[in-house]
Image (cartoon, rainbow, N blue to C red; front, side, top):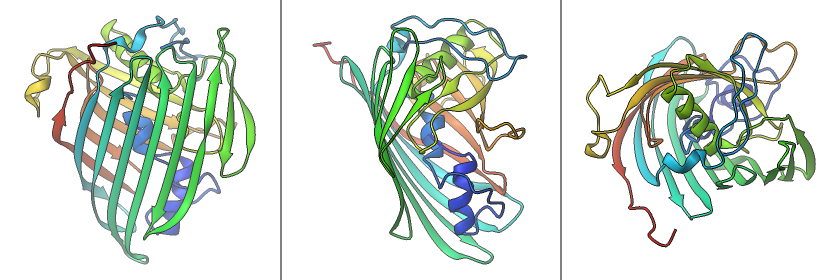
Length: 304
């Protein structure tokens, strides 16, 4: 939760003087979408991002069964700034609905910032998905705005067959079809893979992710896992009191030969049911902290 974050963000942020290091990549994506939808953020297997990564293991077909519907509201604040950003505050609403055969997610991100040479900027991102629980189908739509002007719309659908071969059919910003690398996971399955790895004590995994927040297909992720068990820090909601949890760090990389450093990094505490808190989002030029303000967990649908 969740998506975001990576090189595509830099161009839009640099347009607003938030990140002064554009590299011609994608415009601003729902970075938090990628990160959070790690938790909503079941299917395929984990694909190693590089040879030193752990050997991928298959995830059970019902891998997302431990996840729950949720409505989470986060308060965002500036944790550290080393460049153009003078101040930044915001909020994010993250909603997951269990539709029996699929997960429906909605994320609304609103950040207000002030920069040294760009003035006041209001960045808004709306991200919605419908992901089948078998991890083989994803419908996605992302709309990003800056000061009420639409920067980009990304929409389409992606499919993965029983052998793990996938394609993305984009409707916007332009109609095109891209192949997905074998083993690519969609957001909810990606989250389930993280939680499964944490529960079995794996120190790190490196699955490929396609979340539908940008027009360039899949990206590589490298995830570090630490300390799974009863929460060591106080929980921010009574609904999380009895949930095992662990610290998770996710680094996002573009799939280009010269990609050495991550485009974006996020740290968080993940609970076994897929809820996240204690967010630490590193955009390079600045870092933002996310605090869980409120959480509602609806009952599981009886008819499922």
